[in-house]
Image (tube, rainbow, N blue to C red; front, side):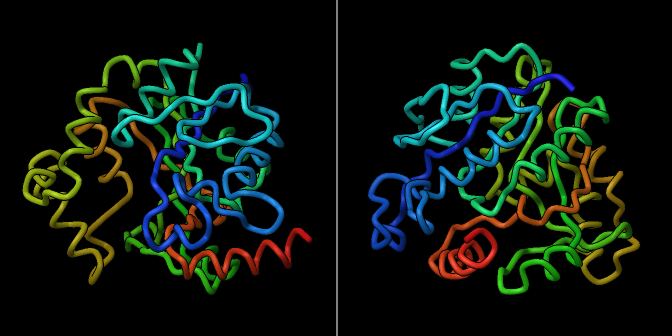
Length: 254
């Protein structure tokens, strides 16, 4: 498997509820045990044999980085800043900085499965049974489908073609994320109705339907990667998550 460059998104401000934790500029710099949240993520990436260079986008610092890029105004611009700075030759791994439970094993497994699919964009989904069994105290939002009940992960593997040809579609989808009617027109009203109905009758929705709808919306071949590693999806975005994750890290990695 070829080496994949990684872009870690750490541009999100701390927010008022996190400032008490000492992260004045970026949530990624909150300390969890003897490391910052960002350092836990970077160390996991370094443990994955298939990860090459690592760039972080944000007003942050960590050991093991090849590049630090000052952030832009939003998530899409930050991804583009990372791509422009790294200029990856092949696929690029996009990683959230707020998943400190992630491990090198989880990253490597996702990269192997995603590259075997030969798609433009691969996105991990995590079965609810795995998440609840491993981390019962962490709350997630789940989607019912005929294929199972899943939550989303915080990694993406994207091809050069995706970055070259789909920026407009990416920006439009991001801009519409909080405008239900606009998003429905983009993804398809029938698909959106199936998503709603499936929360009562899961047989209304299959993963393949969502993959086709998102592929049309982004003008790219998109596939979901079912991962058995729930730590990929356990993001820390509120104070209650911090308490639980600190306890988990203390017990699992001390």
